[in-house]
Length: 394
Image (cartoon, rainbow, N blue to C red; front, side, top):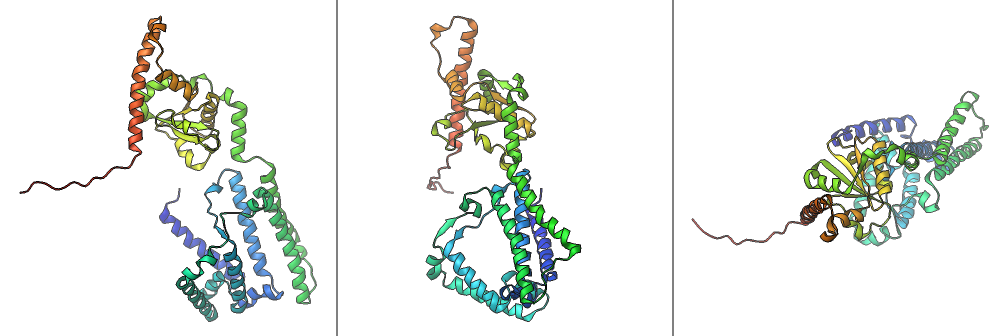
């Protein structure tokens, strides 16, 4: 919906807005920033905790509703020693310089000279790290833990970790307010006018994350609906028999998207001997955003095949459910389809003209489908380039 060029415009606007909010929150002031370490001002902790909980809640809620593909969100890889040592260096620099990288840019934008010097020091550090990268690389890459999240490390669902983090944030807000009041020798009281807003702000993420945890997601609701109703919602008119599919492949293959659905986590090699031109998709991945355009294509009809015809029927029902205009399913398994087409019966067993006509059709279909398979196999291979010696002259 948004072009890559307009992405940059949005990024500039969001960056300007973020910088404005930081400055209005006082993050261009070193006294407010280092107050976190001295105990007299915890605005930094509260702002970043609020930002983290808000972003986390929004991601989980939008993903739960099917409006956001959370699998497409990039998670930075974790290198344990880099994180620990880098965090220690940044913490010391935060205390001594009074800024973090983001707030230093914010302060420099409003003309603070100390922030400009801080940015200069950061650039020197970046250049130094680049210059000695080969020597630092073993430490930098040590204890690589991959693209992990706290929920995966703890072995709990993401909404549960979100609930825990929201509760920890609320406790931190209360605890730091108490510490701040003692350091400043001020009474710890909540403004009665704002008290209901504080309670509402604290309960909102908790209630939203609780609903995400206890209710089925949008994808799970579709899967449950298909499991319960696919026999009723996908009547016989969407069923396709063996000879019909073979005829369509022979004459109108370009009009169809053939989807071979399976339910095994590891795709066996035997599945590769299926219907020519089929796209192999795990049943539960049909609802992934990158498959939605395939299922909703206006210019091609869908044919679902599977080792189990019931699974193909479920796939067709799911496609119709999410907006496909037409979806058919093969009423036999793929192995039975290939057996019917490629294994010609003994002609002496055929007694009627209809059976002999069907045999002749299937012999022709087998020849055509083998040609299609061979053509597709060659299309997938890289082009061989052979040098040719020039010959001839004027």
